[in-house]
Length: 340
Length: 208
Picture (cartoon, chains in turn red, cyan):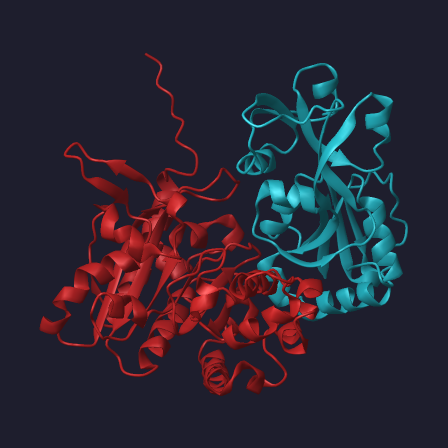
């Protein structure tokens, strides 16, 4: 019998040197996390669709989930994102645990994607979460660990873009009315404006005023006060953090760009508009390696997810795609001393 | 140096005119150019000449930093690209075409021929009629002309080809225009230079 060696679209098998390099990189990154005091959590690859699906809101679209009915009639889903699964499992146990918690995980996530070269349906992730550090300390720690892990490899170009959720909410809501067609709902148009900002569509954004156009062109408005007092103060603190971390991690190109995260909104009117939004509600960051447009990882703060679960705890985390880090487009080459 | 991907098809002339109007000479580059990769040191630019359908992938992968491609192709390939400018010239329309009076009625099930199967399926999602989508790679007008399909979804520029073959534009679906597309990572790196280009495009009134 002739057996085909073909695999389904969007999945890959690693053999020989690829497998060895993958495990070496994973071991190196895991070793660093352990040295930093992070403990491993091993999570299942299958969960009940409810309540998992509701908690995925924004990070994974409904039609990206692999769902199936088990033999006993339960509707299950394959793991598409570690963070909501970890949050749901740990929130009821938090009262009995000593905070802060430093946790990490690794494994496959599966998301259905339309066939498109380079888009994997199964990716291997390594991620970490910091729970219960006060104020913005957790965000900072998560970002520092993220940068440390990224800086492990040698690559041609490594860039991390920083922003924060809700940064553009005030501008988007205020200005959307100026460009909305008569009779249309203001919140829907604010979402469309957010999408135009993310695509850096200057002609569409120009009608909404100078401040948003400056965000599209330069990443931040000339006058941070345009964002509102709270967001302006947040931006100032983020700029200070970026300067500090740029010195500590010279191999990483750190940039502030609020347009990159225009969909990370906290405003209800905006959140109900078109398109997914992620669950972040504080710092957000995204890393690009080499020239590829697809990020190799990212993270941020997501306190609200725990609040929804009845746990008042600060939470920040990140994940890295090992497949993308190892990919040719990422240009990742593990250090020689580590490869031996 | 920025690596710019230009389309070999109908949008190359639009792109060349726009860049030249913006002061980027691209000296010696012609519409019938058979070279695939050309350096322009004086413009600090390298140009790749690519097929329309391949161009978004080259930009998304970062092989090219940016490119010019039609919004019809962008919608069909569903990539993650920034679109900082849309060109005024080269506009056409994506339309349903067929024989006079051939727009299907409510509840009808027909065959629809197109180079844009993904776009066609999205279009059908809110139509009162249904269709089996047939993917064709060229001369889509032949579909309704030879009864392979009742309707076709294709680009219409002047409508002359339709008239010459006894077909009509049944419905304009949307306007199509060439766009400047940029890789998300490259935009961060070359932001200043790209913004200067767009400023000059705007000054020359070649973009919206």
